[in-house]
Amino acid sequence: MPYLSVRTNCAVANPDLFLQQASSLCAQMLGKPESYVMVALDSKTPMLFGGSNEPAAYLELKSLDLPEADAKNYSRQLCNFIEAHTAITPQRIYIEFTCGSRELWGYNCGTFG
Image 1 (tube, helix red, strand yellow):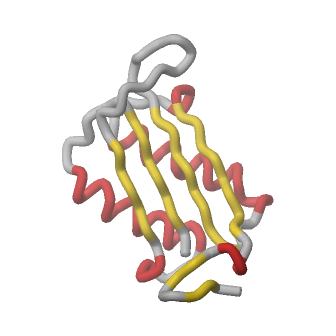
Image 2 (cartoon, rainbow, N blue to C red; image 1 turned 180 degrees about the horizontal axis):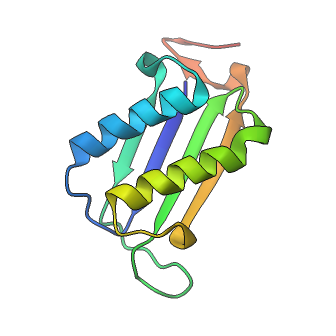
């Protein structure tokens, strides 16, 4: 049920490794089985941040039961991960956190609600 989407104007050197490590990080951060984690990477996307096309990223982390109190910790971990794998500094990363409703999260011909 967790979904992490990463959009960046940078190339990612090893997309498969990036996705595998991002999936593992999300599972660990959220305490969810990795078998439910989905991660998407959209690299080399035309993007401006603050009027500049320097390296930047926009992340979306969506999950059921996403604790608002942990958002700062998730932001730190995700920014550190992106910075370690790209040339993007945390000052050029936006992250949107969304806690989905079980009734509105579909899976396997049904929902979690």
